[in-house]
Image 1 (cartoon, helix red, strand yellow):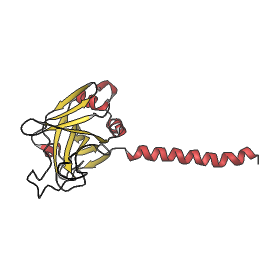
Image 2 (image 1 turned 90 degrees about the vertical axis):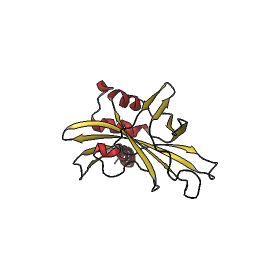
Image 3 (image 1 turned 120 degrees about the horizontal axis):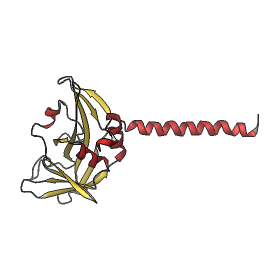
Image 4 (image 1 turned 45 degrees about the vertical axis):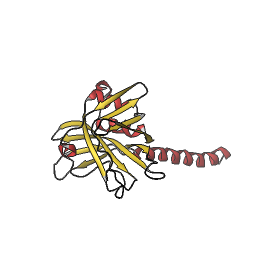
Length: 203
């Protein structure tokens, strides 16, 4: 056996290991497909939401409010549609404070990039309109508020171009509340679009 053969064996194993690790990382972001037993709607969910946050130091040290943003494709007897879920949650216990117990409920939402923005209005019926009976993209806290938005091909294309830099929700008086990117991986959207067959022509 040549010396080069002895080196090639471990080197090949290392390359194979690295390749498998890379595949596993990609697979970790692959969308999840579910069948809702109550509605019989099949949903394909982005592997994990983009998470945006804002500091609220006036209420508590290291206190933060968050917004999760995730895409879904529904398949209802062959009729497919794309939706966006926006979920507001918080690490702040507001139960003893003279402020709302739950985070601000998403309504009109504004996504902003360096080169433009996208404004969406929620559907009144919420996730029940999608045929989703259980919460998805919710945060780790039991209290949250969610809203759902039906996406056109053009709107989905805008989100596919890259994660927004900021997300803004609005109080009842119209005051914007700005959330900045906290845990955002564009690959989750890329793989969602690949899995659901959103074509480049549609973008």
